[in-house]
Length: 121
Length: 110
Image 1 (tube, each protein chain N blue to C red):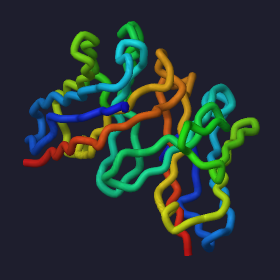
Image 2: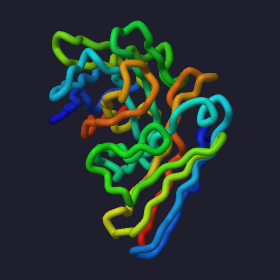
Image 3: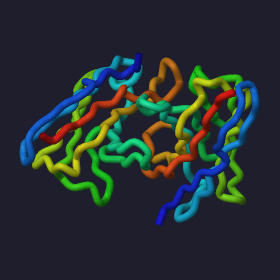
């Protein structure tokens, strides 16, 4: 059974940093692209970032480019999102999602339950 | 403003059929596969349709997908109260080099 478990969320002040983690199990982690998707309160789903199977292709939404860094550790079956210079508008439930393919396209077939990030002074 | 355009809401009676549209452009829907997701806020989204019209294992055939040009459609037949949720389309945008979602459609089963 595929499982994705996010952690690392919390209440953080604007301008500070936070690192999210996603622990994966139930599939060959290193064979697939992985993504972060978020949902701000009262808003729709917003794709944040994706990393392909071998970390050679990393992409970001314009809203987080230059502030967020996605990475993966295949030995630990884990995905990460380093979030720097956080803004109030980054407040959201952050989901880890497994890509359908090894590349960044195709969509997402499994999702975690999310970890809540609240940016507020 | 989302790159992909969906109606904010749709509604229909139990056992009826509903369709949800998703409109894009030649750089996204017109150039790549579309997938659809069912989401109850605060829970994990669920993949309903991938590669325009394929259903993952466990998704009933009441759910269907189609694509024509720069638009895609999700169809749901035999509506149940349990189908009430938000539905999102998504695809890769080759011009922006990012994944894009529609704004979401809230389905109400009256």
